Length: 399
Image (cartoon, rainbow, N blue to C red; front, side, top):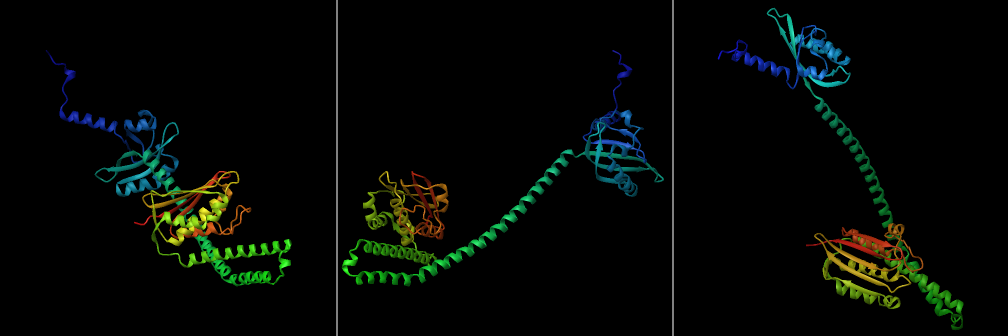
């Protein structure tokens, strides 16, 4: 067989040239070469595809500056070209390529200037790197930074507002504490005097006057008012003692005997209301807490469960206790009158009496809340009007 002269094998030099041409035409970046005045003399296929032009539309017909937006062309003429002539190269100049359809593409421009032996500029070789993804990433970072700055400003404003609210709350609590101490201290003597005068009046009035229905009723009302006022002062005094002894010594308290003792104190109320009490204490028979404070918590919650019973059913009050990893949880549930959402929001405030048909001072649950929070615990209520309430007390578990 005779070999065809047109199928002569390529030598290594020709193969290398073909490989270089292929790499040049289809590189991931745009290549072009231009005369010192910017006239294009060579453009690779990648740049042609970006721009949307045919090769013959650019080579010898367009200048490099015409491939850029107006702002980019002005910048290249005022900064890029002088720098290129001065140092022979430029690196990473950021421009927008202008496509044939009018759209733009962000690129970084690198260029090298070729001179002849006399130093006269002959050719400029340009490399253009597509930075669309990088620009989008930068814009996303900028948006994220703006959002973070805005959120930081909002957080600073919230922190400032919180500090101001805490300052006002601290001042209000201090004023309230001062009032409670003053009221409990300064009102004891007048009430004691009034109580003494009522007793003296009772002893001084003739028997036939005391037997008169109207007089007896008035004296009963006076004594009841004195008793309520005395109870209020006692509870105010309890709050004052709480403030002065927040770090009462904690002990391991057996709940069952404590609840039995409370039931003895509540015996008249239990009998009158025919109330039923149930205790579920198997999961935590003992609680590490200040005994007097724990008694006050349970006494108030049980007393309220009996006191605010529903008129159409037998009162049932349940006490449950369980533990989790970090807390002791006490629950006192009743089937009484229940509370509206508005009442639930008010119930732990001082002097809040939400059912006026029942005698009370409105201090008991406020005192309970102070006791619990002083021990780094919480107290919450869940309730529905007419169905009853569940008070949940969480206390930190002591190892």
